[in-house]
Image 1 (cartoon, rainbow, N blue to C red):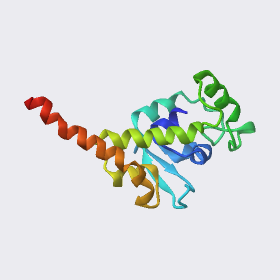
Image 2: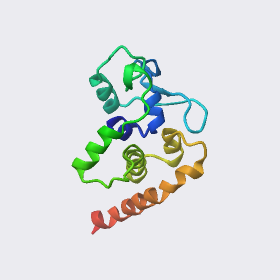
Image 3: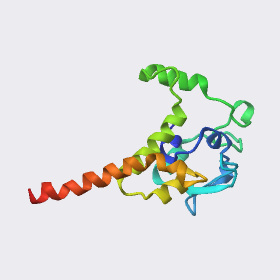
Image 4: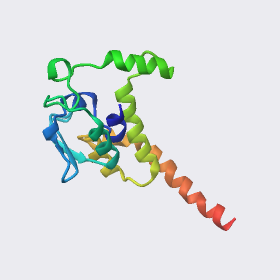
Length: 152
């Protein structure tokens, strides 16, 4: 769950993630077969590095292996327990929701431009990323009002 929040990776990307996809030295994560079809790299930030350092290595090539060390195919049971404890609706898509939170936080921060956000989300087209543009616009409007407070 933290990997989804800190990287914005899609469910399938997380399930396919292998230890050899992570370059701890250069600080990148290689995403194989993303939704857009072309392999991508995203930054390995400090929060993700800390998460990965806590993941138990089981001998599987996968970071989050399924049964028998093979590629994971679902996480319904643990996610349903989390959703129940958190009081989330049954139809809440946790990993997709965390990807959306990641994108929304970056867009509304005013510190990440739309092109960079597109690259981080591995969107093939800028139109997919534009759904977050209104959040960036709001951050810019709020920043513009800071002068009122300062001069006030």
